[in-house]
Amino acid sequence: MERTLIIVKPDAVQRGLIGEIIRRFENRGLRIAGMKFMQVSRDVAARHYAEHEGKGFYEGLIDYITSAPVVVMALEGKDAIAIARNTIGKTKPIEAAPGTIRGDFGMEVGRNLVHGSDKPESAERELGIFFDGSELYDWTRDVDPWIFEG
Ligand code: IDP
Ligand code: MG
Image (cartoon, rainbow, N blue to C red; front, side):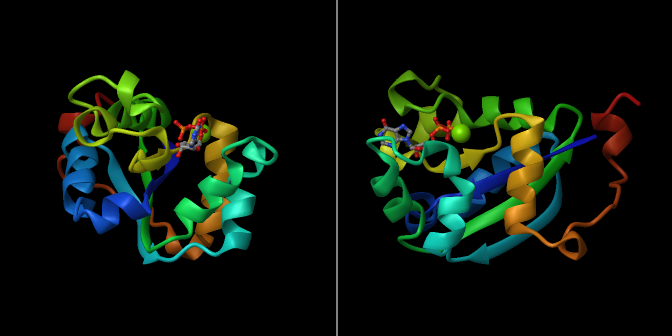
């Protein structure tokens, strides 16, 4: 089992899409290991997006992610990182396939609704920024054998 860090970004929260976005991950089969509603500080945003520091869009990105509350989630499952990324869709909504979150609800890269970790090292690092170990739960669902082969 793998865990990934998902952020329902401020634009999605403002647009009333929290439920819609969580529904898509739940429907896919991903299991929620942790979840909270919070406003991201500039300090936390800078840690989370450290790899983008110095890029032209960096300041705008920090302004965007700190502009209003978000929902952060730890989702788990086999290949959870890749599964979540293809449920989210490509970074630029113009390139995101219909049926993905960004392809169905997004227009611009700077308002692309959702974050998902891109690889295991990123997931571990990002989960550590947003969650204490005690906020992540090991549990199973009765339906798990009907979603995960074994
Ligand atoms: P990802 O979110 O699909 O992993 P990254 O390349 O890691 O995409 O970029 C992080 C975030 O930075 C994007 O989701 C988007 O919000 C923002 N971003 C990336 N490129 C641009 C850009 O060219 N203009 C404005 N914002 C950008
Ligand atoms: Mg990324």
